[in-house]
Amino acid sequence: MIKNTLFFARLVKRFGLANANRLYKSGSKKTGTLEVAFNGVQHPVTLRYNTSDIDVFYQVFYHNYYAFNYSTFLPNVKTIVDAGANIGMASVYFKNLFPDASIISIEPEGSNYEMLRKNTEKYSNINCIKAGIWNKSCPLKVTDKYEYGNWGFVVEEIATEAESNVKGISIPDLMHLYNLEEIDILKMDIEGSELEVFQENYDWLSKVNMLIIETHDFMRKGTSTALFKAVINYDFAVYTCRENLVFIKNKQPI
Image (cartoon, rainbow, N blue to C red; front, side):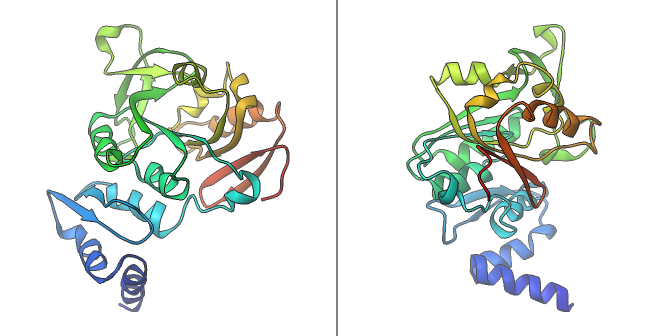
């Protein structure tokens, strides 16, 4: 009881009494959506009841998964890529932190993608793409292979377009599509696809100033190994922060 009371008090402090009450009781709801407006974001965010949406919201805005001292290392953030954007919580976080930056948000799963669009549509310069990040452009299929629901969909490469329900896109093709010379912040939470992304064709890492990534060895063995074998070829320092690995170019301390 004490633990629950403390949690509720912290929700009130962060999001206000009305939002805290609705968030706290969200587990009893089965259908519909919850709109949350709070200090620090320009526009309300929309979350679906009975999904992982509220957990993702807590990760980003309550547990502060992406809170870093960015200004020390990236004084002028112009371009952000949110790979594995889910419902757009990280994109919203970054847009409010860097209002002048352009953000490209990529999400492969259809229902999450629609929520991503809804949560970012009132912001300028956020471009949403329904696609899966891969090491090349190719047909992919979205599945709930590990039964993690809305925050654990994975993509797999398939042989024919007829079986595909989403396109795969590589970082180089993405940069070409948007005429990017470099990426200031690349956030990756791609549910095991880092195994393919970092196995080959990763020379684009030289054009990334900061990589924030959550690896998924518990889903697919070898994801962290593939990542480190790739980044070791470039001038990055690596740090940990919550569930993320943070790679900063030029060995600058965090």
